[in-house]
Image 1 (tube, rainbow, N blue to C red):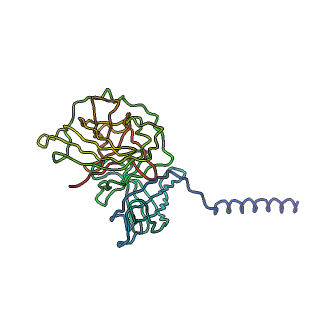
Image 2 (image 1 turned 180 degrees about the vertical axis):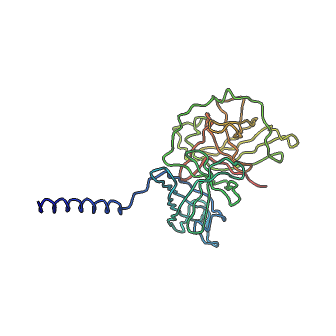
Image 3 (image 1 turned 180 degrees about the horizontal axis):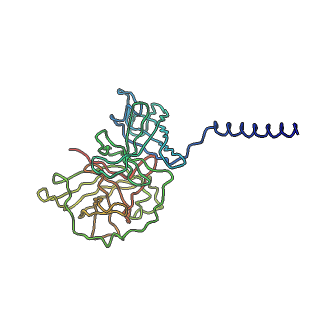
Amino acid sequence: MKKFKFRLLSAFLALGCLGIISFLKPVKPLVFGIFEGTSPCNVEASLFLQIPANAKCDEVKWKLTFNIDESSNPTTFKLEREYGYYPDNFSTKSMGKIRIEGKWKILKGTKANQSANVYQLQSGNQYISFQLLDDNLLHLLNTDKSLAIGNDGHSFTLSKSPIIINQQISNNPSTQKTRSLPTGLKGDSIRFAGKTPCKELAGTLKISKTIDCFKLKWYLILKQDPEKNYPTTYELRRTGHRESVIKGKWIVSKGTKTNTEAIVYQLDPDHPDESIFLLKGDDNVLFFLDSNRNFLVGNSEFSYTLNRLRK
């Protein structure tokens, strides 16, 4: 009887030890999403990114991983960043890679959209924030919660890898009304520029898929009636395997499949199969949409974003 009690006690102790070991074992974080991109250097984000104020910095590569707990609540993030400068027109000189870790949470509201979801990252006493554009895209915010403005080479949009495919079906663009809304912009012409991947737009732009098309360079001039603020014509210069200049009309309409109030610029509304759709993030940043008015998702080098140029 004593031997039986001893064995029973030993079994309970063993189970208890196993329970303690299991409790103490680190829980592997659940990955919510990984976003990547290449941006210009940003003075407001340099402290968070640990880039010296006097550093040579032309671009920053981002790989941002968000973790959640078992209840899908935000927990931690890991940011792998590398910055460098351009010693010439053909290469980038890396100035070093580091890993930045911390906590993140979800907030509401940007300068242009009070209902937008915002991901705020905290590392030590430093913060940066991103607007969630959709499940696949983030865009860096300035400290005043406006969208960070890139240049004609890179933007501040990060793309999810791998992307989430939204199967929801929207109205065909050909059913959209062609009567325009006011632009809400000032001036008689507004200029935007940027570089994007090529593949997703090849069909719309009638670029042969057999041609090696890695990126496209864009220069867009939107013209409007300066008194009534209604759109008139546009001029689009696109450089890929060859340069082309496209001219036509454009309109302003409302609505994407996820946001009925979103402002959308449509180039060539009279030819919907060839139209290019651009969502207005704010007065300074435009995002390419596909023919179903979904955001186009970029890669680690380029995003489908155009940035306003100042005269």
